[in-house]
Length: 371
Ligand code: MG
Image 1 (cartoon, rainbow, N blue to C red):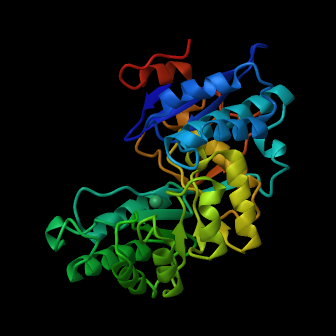
Image 2 (cartoon, protein in one colour):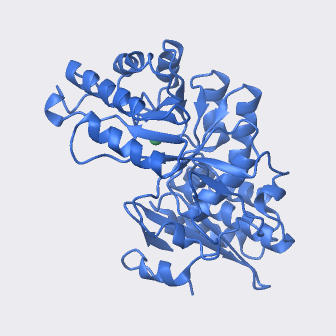
């Protein structure tokens, strides 16, 4: 079922049992997912839903010829895997964090994306940061890629940066930094836009401020380029949201091509894959900071994985443009993200009951509620 948020279209996935229980998961992007879910349904119908990990492996292997190492196959798999964990929680009466082996913390530190202001000025970006601090966040992220006026760009078809762009992006980063009180951390995102040398020019211009991370400096396909940037700047580099499955992230972790690893759990393979990556990062003394743009279903599922990871740093929240985002969780008893934290629920499974009336009012065009 697709729900139209702002700006994202969210994909919720339901798995039902013949005993009347149901689990709800989320696949982070809708692209091609519905068709693949039909295939997955045929694979899992009639199976024991408590076999979450073997079932996920069966789905992955059954669809390997269609590309189950990445892309829409993995998106759909992630949604079903989350729903199976939710279902297992409901069958056993246990919250997801308990099923994963326990939690290191009760509250999950959430970081807020600040979006892009209408006008191109470092001051406007700083205002966005102040707004998030006032809302209680202790980590904020600013998108500095393409923040400069379009006229500053030398050539829209290449990955190079002009002097004026470098100057402007550095000014945005510094203005955001100046706007923060000392207890709040700053992350800056480059959205994999730039060539290696120019990404490094930006990173070096940020070395005089103590940011938590600079994200996705180079395109995702070339690990050596990412590692070159990481090796040649003192700024911590974060990467991972465009990589798939633990296999896809293993070389990044093992080569230390990034300092902070940022898989998207409802996109890149699900809860079990997230746990695997967190453990691999822990072995290499790297931080784990998942990317996330989901509804409360995918967000809280990610929070359970974060609770189970000793090396967890911060989890993204990118639903702030949707005023009714918190209301999607029907029985939460307050905002899901409260003053920059999610308190883990003790309810069975993921612990998010859907607000059916609200979601019915926001179904994507042509969508119907589950029958
Ligand atoms: Mg990002």
